[in-house]
Image (tube, rainbow, N blue to C red; front, side, top):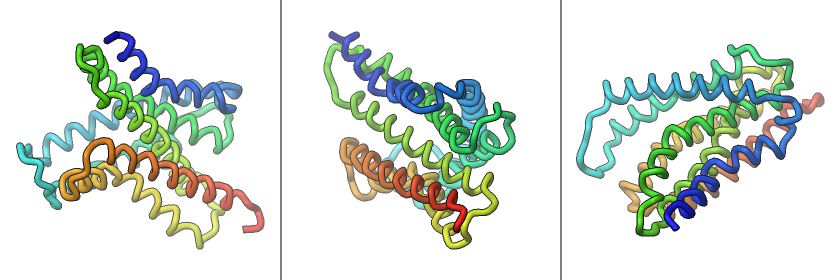
Length: 228
């Protein structure tokens, strides 16, 4: 029963990444190499973030929301944006379209994040004798993170790779990118100040990720219209 629970949670956490790759044109255009490169860039970025967090953040035993620490954490979180920029604009890719490139980069980035942050807790905790919903919720959170990451990659593609985008959409693109990049600080505020529990936070992340995905998709479509 414990292994069955572990496999169910693992499939919920990592399965959507494989489904997304297989169900979209990414598999037809053989973009696996791009996703692997993005995953490697993520691991390097995560190492840099870890060093910065250990250097500049103070370890606190309390759950009190510290605006200064959270602001510093959000600034360090923008290292992810720099890593995405490198993965999108500086890495050499196969001759694939901009549309497929940002999806492949976002998919590889999100998969590496799930493996790094959720595989070990699943292996240690989901095999326990006592059933808990926490690992199911972690799987749902991983799905929200997948949507967030692909949305941020789409916005980054518009910011850095598309030169002829309408000027009226530029503030919206940057605002959405900032919201997604600072989502960890937003959820930390909801948890520590508003007193939200984990299920409510996961629900908020799922709803917000769908909204941001819809907005990112509409922005991408509008920027591709030649009339604009």
